[in-house]
Image (tube, rainbow, N blue to C red):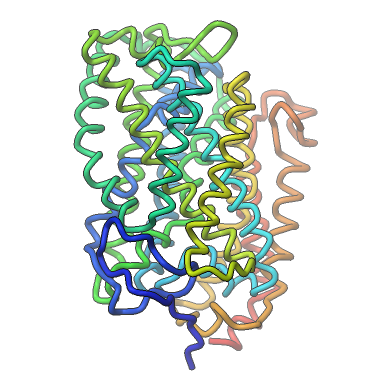
Length: 457
């Protein structure tokens, strides 16, 4: 028996109409679109400078270009594979990703990962991308960093407030420009780079870098189904997953490789009186440099409209009841303000803030994915529709999640603010908190929740 809550209001495929409702399932009459549109949805938001800079981190850490490329491929493949699996539930249930998580975590237990994602996506990721967009706009227009940040944030919040259809349209129509300008810039950057540089031996810096790359790609996983939920149920789920994963993997991998190459060509780290955005564009012809700066601004907007939109969805999944039919839009504005304040404070030390934020993302997403993956394997494709809005709990989910997060960080985290037991006694060990967290939570959930899940099938 289904207990789905259906979203109210008329919306359809109207682009400029404000999307009504919140996290409720999308009624069939409002379903529209094709699986192929998800390629642009996940390609455009990663065609921006933050993606380039993540790739640059590998060489900044001391890796050779070849080592950095290996790390980029591994981290992005893991993130894209999870995106392939998770996206498939979008059209099936018509609800956001964090609502789907209630099957594994229960309604109350799901509040914890929803809080993590609301803060990470709606505020944290929003701040990361807003900073790169603001630096690019400041370089292009000679406006101050703060004024540029205000302009970028206002555009992002306005698009996210209007809602799903405008978000998808923005990603679709801005993608060709982003592909062209970043594609040309990639060719020129690679031609000027020195790819034979030597780096540190494995595993230390390499494992930290893989964690950062994975944290960037996997940052999209907790709202994978948010942008497939409007697709008709007739769309092939595996096809939707393939388009989403391809858009994510291709965009992140290509630009991160360009970022690693750019460091060998002279791009500097964020630091006193340095601006890697202007370093990157300075190596390009003047006309292309300006086009890329505009692309960086546009790319940050493409990324952050998703972050605000999904952050507001996670906020509503926590259980906040906003009486207005525009509750999603109201939540988007709130997160836009919070993200702006964090971005403004982070502009003084963006390099350290970004590196540590990426690792923190992997610390909680690894265990979260471990619980979700175990639940999916045990259920073997059985429908979870009746659990999505039911007052039902599944203690195995939050227990496995919390233990996985705690143990993986305590033992294996390796960053500025905290060093785990293992890397503290072996400085070359690196950071493997994310795979350890995944494994612990996966095993624990399978052991303590397996019988309950089997009984529910």
